[in-house]
Length: 128
Image (tube, rainbow, N blue to C red; front, side):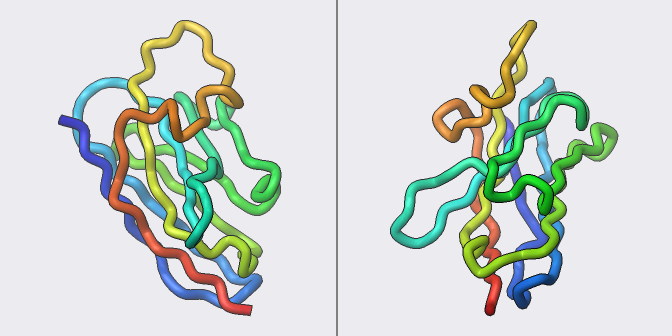
């Protein structure tokens, strides 16, 4: 069974940085993503990665500030978050879907409805 474990959340001030990690247990290839959910709002996509940094997607709200990466040897996906804003405050979830695609459009696959596996979430709070 696939398990995802997030770490790295916390409380920071606006303009500061955090790095989230998601360790994946289980064999196989997966498309990985970060999603977030603020109180009273729907879960939204943040960023997704396929096999390498050439196959990524970023939401417009985080593009240029957040960077997704993965270390296949450690089965870990990272989200480096810079220049954080109060509106980035949310619970951040790591999601995964088994990569069985020959061709995939990252913008379409990076959707919380497409993910099959989820971590429990990590709280990120950005104070103004």
